[in-house]
Length: 277
Image (cartoon, rainbow, N blue to C red; front, side, top):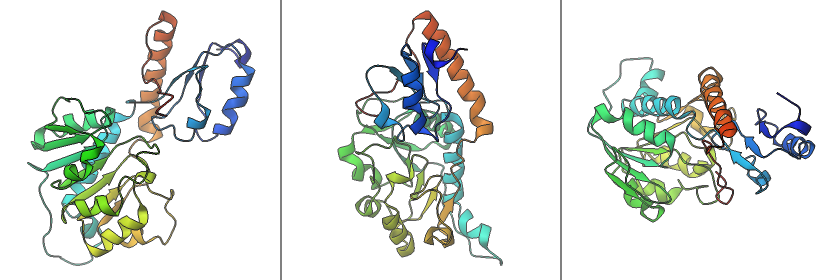
């Protein structure tokens, strides 16, 4: 390991302080490759350039996040939001995931892992992605123009997208109206994918079954926000992947990419500078 002036590659481990990165890069004129730690790099997209090769954590955390999606989906469909807060015996509620219809927005590593985990549940899976192409285990892959059609018969809608200008607010009032009244929304992408005020209205009206959110807008969700008091809303504090889960996974990715860089091979998790992810 060397300092920036002698370095050819930089492993960036300060995602919460993007303002420091330009200074470090300026100190390292020989830096060719920058490895970013997270899959979501929206706080760093304004720093992307064509002078460096950029890689990120795409796919690194797919397994734990997909497991979290499965947990939230089962909890939502089975009424855990209301049962967990109950203080007396209550009437039965809940639906099966078994044989259900799942719509996933996003076609990356989280989706690939989730599709595999859903195998025993024999679900009918629709994936919406920027460029539709067949995916193993998926019944139907559609483009963004078919969003509302994909939502219209889903029991579970999973948001696992990168946050870009095109995907910001993709779950708005119109999208929520397209969902069946029993459907659950699961968001493990970014809070900005969902228009929070529209979601609050839909949950209050009971126009969808509920929402399970690992990410929110704003984040952290403020004390006293309406979402905290809703029985049909489950909230986890952005823990689909925790440091305890993720550090070993990230270390493996960095190690693999360092070996690939030395060997002159293609690196894992390349960032598309034009798309910003």
